[in-house]
Image (cartoon, rainbow, N blue to C red):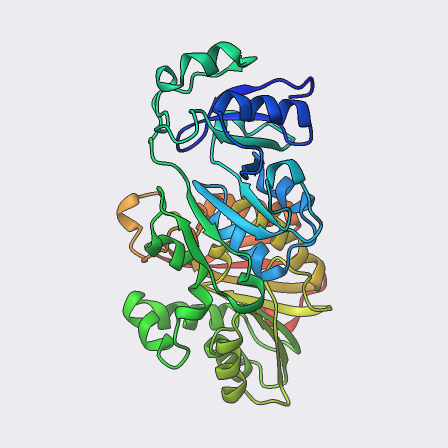
Length: 389
């Protein structure tokens, strides 16, 4: 890429062509090999989502959250492009950018973006095997990577240009990811009815109330300032405020609808709720108790590790973090909790205990049933009353 070359490579869908997204000569050459007009758009492909988000710093929080649920994966996302970034990939519409972050482990170390298009002549079938890439393209390419046989169905193109402002989205081109899976990833915080949420979750998770009881018990006694991550309809917050009668609670959640229900349920003089994501900076501490129920498993592994470090920083010496959540069980037969592809990302319990220790916690399992666990993670220091549990 650095010297204007063109590569034939395996994506997670079909074979593609790639070149330096900022090199006009390379882009014109790639389009020439395909027989594609220069006013037609292509996509910019990153091989690491964090690098993509860093390069597109003007994205709003709702769009970022959607990308974190969709990618990496076989989806091309159309986004508003107010800074006219990667203009050579935008064709005749510099205000729209197509973004791809494929799941190709063998190429995960690539640290720069490329302009990419399918490795075929314009209008011809996509190539699922290298020998289906036209010979003229293979001969002209500077690098050809054989990745074996691929799924053969192109990426689904999703228009998110208005998602930030009004939550709307549409499928521009059907592909390997179906509409139901996209809806689960893009509408998860909106398709839950807050009024029926508790009944739904109790039906999906028969041990839900036991999990809440164990979280509450693990929180100890005597907390004065509590941070709750993922307040939902206020079920956990209600239990914690009852357990800790002298406490004030700060709660965050990404869903305005859920927070509306929680505010109506909780005492306004003891509970302050705000809309925020787990990936955002945490409310100002110090807290002596942080608790989360069925929320952290929505994060990917790297995000969990980062969250645990930030929680440790928000707790005072002797404080406690109680995590009640879904994990990947050692025995697959214990994976009984219903999960949503693209939205739920549970991790093995042993990994989470390692990440908690890396963050500076002294952690142990307080309760476990199938794939549900309650973990107590304490900050070393002068013990608080709540440490007596």
